[in-house]
Image (cartoon, rainbow, N blue to C red; front, side):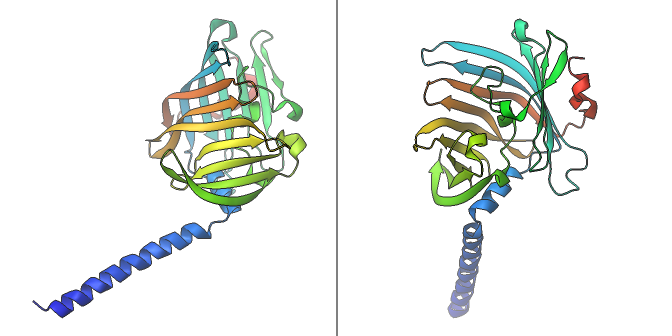
Length: 271
């Protein structure tokens, strides 16, 4: 056996591995804050999504309330071909009985156009359009708001990459985002920890003008569902009141292909 030849081959293999590793590392470092947030917003979410959802809210005294609902999401026809995927979202309450049928419908629009949001009230049998000024009101009495049913548009903020860290043993980018219009946003800035492997937001902190955290969002139990990285538990905590609300996704399914566009027609709500 030619030892010198084997040694040279080993050096070539090792050098190749080092080059590939260095290339991968440099590509990761080349992403700036804006690119990271855009990729997070544009991550794979399938053509459609369905899930039963449990919404549990617990106040600082330990009192809890529970609501169950059905969530359906579908891409807006033609939006993928246009280069900016948008979604229609419908959440309908199934329990408890006294709020059964209550629903919220979202038509995501291209920035800077405001999203269209409707609230269906069974008591009056019709849907009322939610004005933008009320987008940040509580969703079904929880710590989540209407606009938090979908990801915040990255173009609404200026982004800065602060550091790299770990959250739940996952490598993350830590990004500070300052809204162009803080009064409309309802916060002065936010700090988001974005998973480097999936581009999912694992933790997001909202701050006021005094650098005091006012709200905390965390994502738990990230799993691969139908080939797509999915957060199965999302929690919102009001730091001032100590109240938390948790979305738990039960039996999530992607790309079933059986959701009609008519489902997202506001005139069909309640039928």
